[in-house]
Image 1 (cartoon, rainbow, N blue to C red):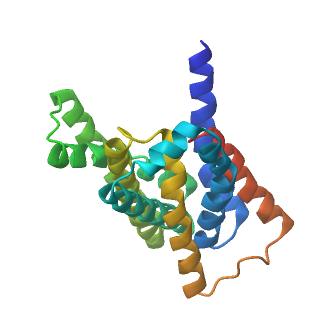
Image 2: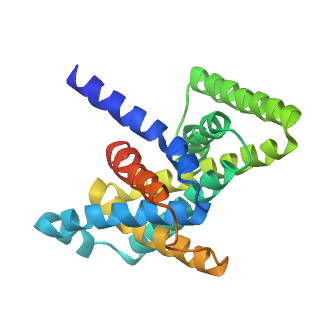
Image 3: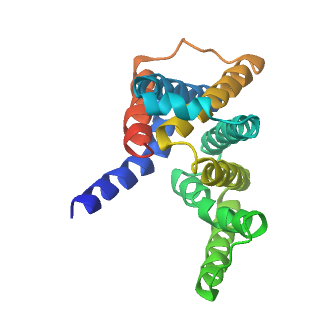
Length: 226
């Protein structure tokens, strides 16, 4: 019963992400940047307080570090594309499509880890993709721009799958908190650089925008993901 409650809270918190992003009404790169940057500030002390965490980080190989950087870059792209999609399509459509991530993880798992899947899993894969196609077709009939938003959400799902697949490999040697902290660094650096390049404002936003970004950090990220 206890685990079920925590699972419900986690899913509900994570599901609110798109709503907070829409309410924040800030550029996608900035919203994503602060979501990851604020979360990193909160979890970083946990990575240095425990001796075992510091030992884990010291034991990382060059290959592990490169993979974590790629994973962080993929995470940053995921959030940027997903949040950007909300400017074109509905919260419901974007959220449903971006949660196709497990399906792409199945594809990557098959080709990278040679994992085998049952006929039921394959059938579920086909049904999920058919559902996303129906959503895209319906959005296009309502507003052609919505299809572009759906496409961005789909690409975002692919990038978060890359993050998860790398995590599946790295997590054999690295705890969840260390993996999260280490991958968030290249993610928010990339998003900060992107925001600078496209010349969006970093600070001049309304009080309500900052509140919703904090909600995104504390509720959707800290409760939903961590």
